Amino acid sequence: MLSLSDLRKEYSLNVLDESNVAKHPLVQFEKWFQEAVHAEVPEPSAMTLSTVTESGLPSSRVVLLKGIESGCFIFYTNHQSRKGKQLDEHPVCALTFFWPELERQIRIEGISARVDEDTATAYFQSRPRESQIGAWASPQSTIIASRHILEERVNEITKRFEGYAVLPKPKQWGGYRVEPHWIEFWQGRTSRLHDRILYSKSENGWTISRLAP
Image 1 (cartoon, rainbow, N blue to C red):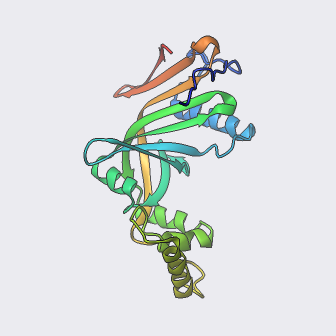
Image 2 (tube, rainbow, N blue to C red):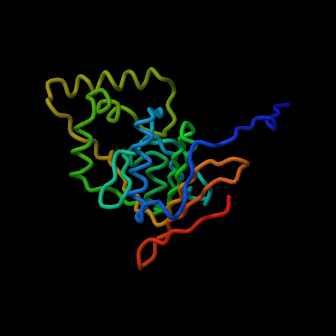
């Protein structure tokens, strides 16, 4: 039997108070993100994306944040992947960042929508060529018989676009922008009395509140 009851850690690196956070959550997010980069947190842009299945069940995986534009969090994927289909069917989603080195977590809830084709194409063509070929070769989230099939598809795509200075973007590949309406900043504290500052959006802007740990 696996027992984890004795695994405990006291959090004491920082404090978080509603009196000194930024008035806008994205300003606060960028501040914390830069601190995570400065602290050399591994993969600071990695975030858990949670979606809703057609049966109303939760579904989560880790993706990479690729930017914040016009108040929205941006990431890219295959629209025909499981997460892509779920987002197109049920746009509600959640994002979670966890940076244990700083004893911090950020939870975001919002509504997703596809980014426009020009934006998606520009980002796709800025990626390493191998990543572009991989996006063409992989029928993401579908069952395949073996890895050999992927390797063969990569070889085929590589030959197809040999001599192309720039690869075209696959029709099924693109991005999503998540417009947040709820963002919680979590800072670990001693005795499990953690700091939780919530930004909730309404017609009048953002309201800042403190949540009990």
